[in-house]
Image (cartoon, helix red, strand yellow):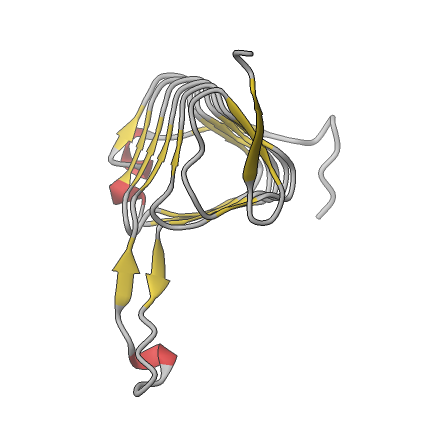
Length: 151
C-alpha cells in the first residue's frame, strides 16, 4: 500500500477506542492499537502513520500532544525469571504518562514506566528509558535531555 499526500486519511478516534478520547483526537491511516481500554487521551492528540501503541500497563496522553510516524509506546515488559522460558512468564506493568503539548519525533521508542513532562520534545529515533523533564529536549539511545525549551 502506498500512502501519498493525496491518499492519506486522517481518521478520528471513536469513543470506544480508548478509556477516554478527548475532542479532536486522530490517527493517520494505520496504527497498531492494543488495550485501548487502558488508554486515556486529552484533546487534540494525534498519531502519525505506523505507530505501535500498547496500553496494557496504562497510558495517559495530555492535550495537544503529537506522536511522530513509526513511534512505539510500550507499557509492559516480560518478567525475566532465568528459571522459566520467557513465553511462560508474566508481565511487569509500567504506566506511561505523556504530558500536554509534547512532540514525539519519528521512530521514537517509549519504554514502560516513564513520564514525559509537559512541552517536552523527543527527537527522532530516541529510546526513552527514563523520565523527561517538562520542556526538556531529549535525544539519543538512551534518550538524554540536552537542553530546556524554557532557557
